[in-house]
Length: 410
Image (cartoon, rainbow, N blue to C red):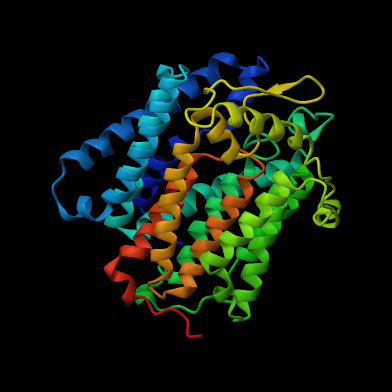
């Protein structure tokens, strides 16, 4: 993959929005506090400046690009305002949170601007930055299986990309950018490419490395998601028509069923064999207690939420500020309206995407969204990641250039 100055430039636009969780973990441990505090401020300032630049272009630029991609920008703006309004009602809003919402809007404007200007440039930039971080993170896990400080528990280990579960976000973004380039053939002249070059395609090697690092960290959530990608890739490699199974209607029904069994049917042992295979039980590492607390809070504060600082307690007495389920966490803190807005946008665009009959690339986008939705049942997830996937989904749905690409025959 050949790089140029523009590719490196836009990689640097993306990276401030994905600050390593390692910075705050090391700062909390009292290690080089001044350095990591400075890096945190630098990343925050960079995000704000980049967001301001692209929001300014979004508002004042009158060319055709803005008209093409203002749906996502507007959607993130509405979603962000719903968070602010809810936080105002439950009296938990604070200045840095307002800045975070502002950066969500700016990031949506930045991604849209780059993608609609040059699809290849956007995809290469993402593949470069997330590929470098993912491989560095994986190799650091192989070198330090228990983290940099040889922690007695994986849960307390500090890795290059953060905690034992932090690597997932970098892996899945690299997978999306890399395979998008391969499926659409954007890395080759005149868009002529076979989906897989058996001699020179390294994706399976990358994926095996990521799976190995997930096994070492005992991150079951990451491992399950990567195995789903592996199965999809192998089926696609051997030309099976797996894309037909990635129909969004089927996927949403499946995710809904899984969500029901996780939260409302604990006495059913259907999932026990699968959980046992990954070394887990139906308590999901204590998440079930947190989910029950979240549900109780939601019953009382379902409209405007309980506030940003909501806390959840484990039986050991340790507390956390996240419900370890993105959906429950959103409703607990901000009420039901933000989640309804999120679901409405997702469902509308997924249905429209599937309607343009570009099943091969569309099935891949459905796969990535499905993995993110499944992962969100067990952990937090950055809205920045959803924004990247949504801007790609909307571009694929609306781009008039889609007919140029010669996708594989059935």
